[in-house]
Image (tube, rainbow, N blue to C red; front, side, top):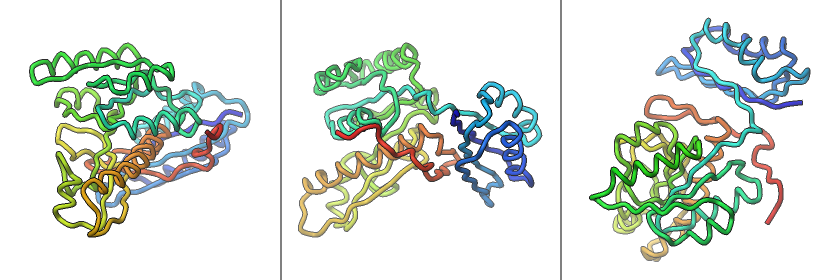
Length: 294
């Protein structure tokens, strides 16, 4: 039996769930997980349905038959095959905690993605990356060569067929043009609990303000710095006795966890853009399971 996922966005109307579930039942499919949300402010409906095809109906047949239903409700929709791993590029500068965490999660099967390349503006992590048989690209970025550097990055995206870029503490601001080209396909980790302490040195800003909670925010990248739709956040408590370097050390663990959870949500099609916000549905049972430990 094959498992698939259907994602749907449309204006709120009566009978959407009934039509979806009825169609899947007719095609010999059994729903194993269903999440939905009606946004009363925007009038939009969001749904994610995971199901098993018990009678051998393939994904192409499911797509073809669902077209008329989708047209009736003017849906934005897609059937997803979980066995097809998303191709991902990771970009990093000189802080490697998020990169190393992601490499480990992929290695044990906790994060089912194909890392097709790692891009950096420094050479620090070349050996770590190539030792895992992942292509490494060092693309230096300066004020003078930024357009050429971004063109080189986009060449890697095209050559690898990457569907997602992850900024794992990549300390360069992307151009408006690149943000628009990859809209909804670049995830960043910001070392602050946004919307507080944007921009550079957020831990220093937090220390100077004497906050008792620091955190991290993973969001989609837009042309507005640190303003993209938020996917995942978390915090850690701190005290008056801790130094700025303590803030950085404590924050690293939170950053790694938050980024991994955001990627997990994106690759399992649990994140829906809703204007400047997101709808993020809970994970389906079993989707966090690892193939092996260590």
